[in-house]
Length: 384
Image 1 (cartoon, rainbow, N blue to C red):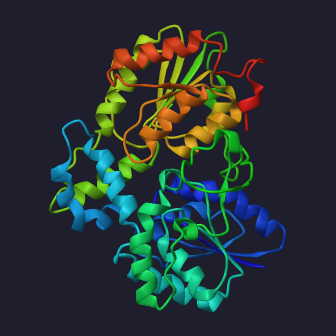
Image 2 (image 1 turned 180 degrees about the vertical axis):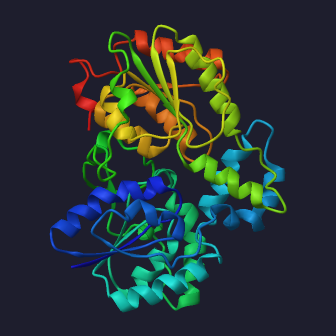
């Protein structure tokens, strides 16, 4: 079988696909990953073919023609929430054509039997329909918040342009279902149908090991890990490159890190590891129980963590669910606010609403004192 996989967005989208693609390759199937130059490193250590021909994916470009709607947002509504809805509504807009042209040419040459696509990739939906092959989205935060009814009007416009039949059913964007890597009872997807499920392994990155200093951390006190993920720094970098900035204030990653470090300093009865994703922060004066690093193999560290302070990206949430690690979620944008609410709803942790150092520290203390959302014998059922 020939399997074509598309990956856009942040590296986390590719890492979610890796175990699935490995299993397919090990079973003898031909796997071709079509992606962007920036995401090639995610797949370079695996036995899959790669083609980095796709143009860089800028989700904000899809909403630029519709920014006037932001001026009509009620004061009680978060502008970033409206931006997310604009992106969802226009993810199948005219900007899809350059991407589709590249992907369709590659797909016609490769002749896939199946397309596994990034949840944001409407070009892959159209490619599958043009070739008459099945397609399924792979797990991502965007897939979780996707409302097919919002996507359908513009997707039908693209279908008409390509001579494809228009569809009345919003679920025509996922006609064969979808992939996920959490149990159905703990799904974060509100609008999507049945699921083909798989379980990710800890060994997402080939040969990943924890640094030696981690093995020397104290074991007689709780271990707290905090990270902000990779998506927000990328989005902010793209926004900074624009000649005309978006009229939406995105959370400041440096400000969030400062607040997390301030909270870490207050948790003096814990050991706290903070991952910065490479964002420069001032660590001078931090107490000895706080350890700052640019990045480390998160799935491996979570095997030993008592509490995870996270931005609420879906990959991070899934990794914590796998190890039964309680979550303190400090969301920023996109699917993250909805994920924070779902985490609280499922009893997997708490949503941090006070974004200051004291508010973060208070939520951490409550979770560390609460034996409910943890790895104890009373809560094994939500580990996945």
